[in-house]
Image 1 (cartoon, rainbow, N blue to C red):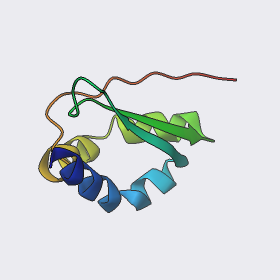
Image 2 (cartoon, rainbow, N blue to C red):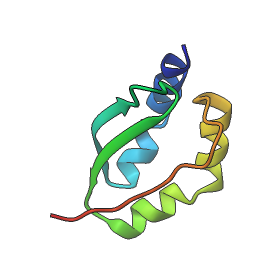
Image 3 (cartoon, rainbow, N blue to C red):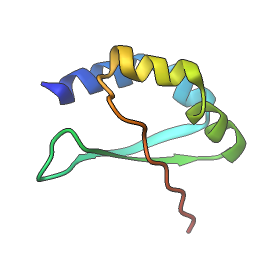
Length: 79
């Protein structure tokens, strides 16, 4: 399934997420569209996080290995 493809590609980039100070908290799929994913992370360094998410290498990895077909939408919240 496409979710399995995403999970496999996502697992391949664990070191990159750790270097960007990301800790995965959840992966949800939309009820009406299982191709629409919602990932929840915590992070400790916003600059490293934003640099990682803007990386052309990450974008290429997502397309080639995780089945991503559209640009991610990023939202940031604080508590």
